[in-house]
Image (cartoon, rainbow, N blue to C red; front, side, top):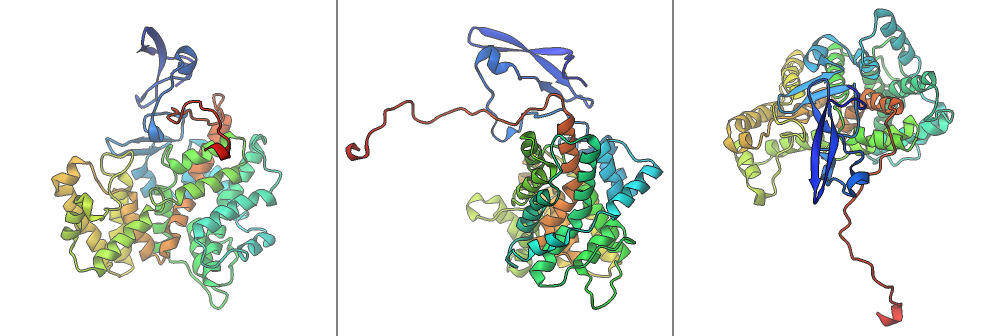
Length: 433
């Protein structure tokens, strides 16, 4: 697709003025009206709170169709990648929009493995943070601080230097995430182990201690790898748009991703899986059934909110939730445990899928609904759920930042507004008011 050769035009009439606007068509048939010259030609702007109908870029990275429940990374269905691929291969795919050769993948593994350690001075940075501080705040601050350790990283670096910064960030993020947890517990930091896979190393950094050997469970490692794959990218969501927006000012990769982590922290975005677990716990520990809870959720005056259902984009079953629902059963079965929260979650889902109230509003389970249950089963603390979301989203953020960097049409993000305040008035001295 090219923004320079539109095949169609759209006509817009404002008063007595009619203009033609180019119409762009994506590779999957998406239609967009190019309004870049709208203000110059008419003096008008568009009004679109939340940018739900506004395309900010042309992208080759991720395609999703919310009406049909489709998610593809660079053309590859998420179902195939979840079953056959691994997180580092998916990371390469997102960054390059092609699957790596065997040699490329081996070299990528080697690069990631040998960049996992953080500077010893950076380890002391954690000591300046309160142990009660939320891990997402600590991770955002630490990733931003990487800019001070790698001051040679610039927005306009050559391609090979941008790649080196991307590898460093992808490699060091598990170490930073785990150290935020270790700091909160007052436990010693563990060094990465080069003989472990990416997800195994995350578990080692999180749960190993110097007192005894730690052997990562392959079942847990695979489940974690799956979660990372499903979170790896999701088009122009809040945090990804934040990374692109900050990068549009020519801020470096570390600063841009630090801002993305802060955006992901919000309960309406990455923090939603934590809210799901808290909701399920409240049902388990309360004196009401799942059916009673759903009835309250339908009553707007009750103050009860159903978490993990519905999505800004998906108006069908989130394909990631379908994969995680199956994984929940497999992980818990292999670990030989039963989770009452999973049973409550399934009951809530069954009610929602058969209740006209939820069907009419297209409130289907989303990725947050089941991810928290798996994280909990893997032993991940609740306040670390969003940190693990950030771990998974890292290659998507990097890929989006790099793509924006290469885009000839990219400009600094600067939305317009419709001013509704007071019209011009004269200043009145304080003694005359």
